[in-house]
Image 1 (cartoon, rainbow, N blue to C red):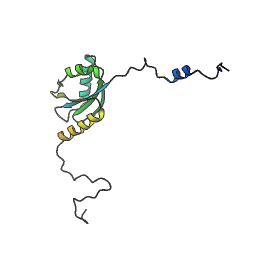
Image 2: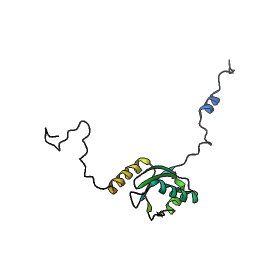
Image 3: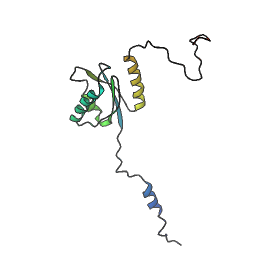
Length: 146
């Protein structure tokens, strides 16, 4: 009765089968970097190629995560932040300046900052006001007037 069947693994074999490989998983702490341009109309593809070339020349591994009018978001390991900061402010060939606006450990906080940055650089809107959320009444117009 004390013998194991060849069909049932021991407890140690079961635990080893489901344990993650510790040496194979080398994770790094990520940092997200918000870069802003001196002009919101800068073509981001040309700018990202220039930045990628500068990063590669310094041996920095960084990935372009998001972009928009006047900004780029890069992700890099936390150990590369000092070298990343050393590259900026950077000037593009068309005399556009790029600066680091903010560095964050989460993409959520950086996107929040990015939206406020884009809103501050955008020209003021002259269009109609935004519609109210569903379920809320619009009190800006009297009843019966669209």
